[in-house]
Image (cartoon, rainbow over all chains, first blue to last red; front, side, top):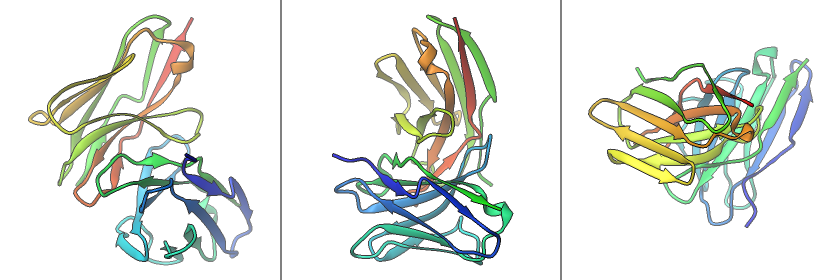
Length: 113
Length: 109
């Protein structure tokens, strides 16, 4: 049973470009969470999605950031017009149900030049 | 607000026992989880406490006291490979995890 998969593992963008991060949850998991981690810090919650629904986006910046989890395919975290402050590791986690154990993917390291 | 506090660094020797404490102040508390992270890699789930008491999983144990808003992770028979960052995280009523800043554990020979 494959774990949570994320791609790309590393992404380099110039200021003003768009970044698209993908996450495929574990088989049988319908709950997806995105977290951001800056160096030497803990993970910060961004958004919680179920298939075709955003459940909680309280941690997501109001501008430039969006997330989706379509009926078919991976969850996508999209960052438009990236700035240097967006450089971080972005982790996706999945769980079989709400408030159940979350299992994390390997992360996408975004570097904005 | 919501906050978790844990020590920033802990050092111990191989074979020893170490305890990493975590105090929290949150709303909508459902449980306390512990994750291990090596060098910025994927956080790995270690343990979860929803009720007061001790949960044991091999060399790792975790304790929770809801009345004291306090928990700890206990690592026994330390090995070099246990050198990593350890995060406590509170599960909220909306499903999201709220993480502490992490404790860097260094195991020395």
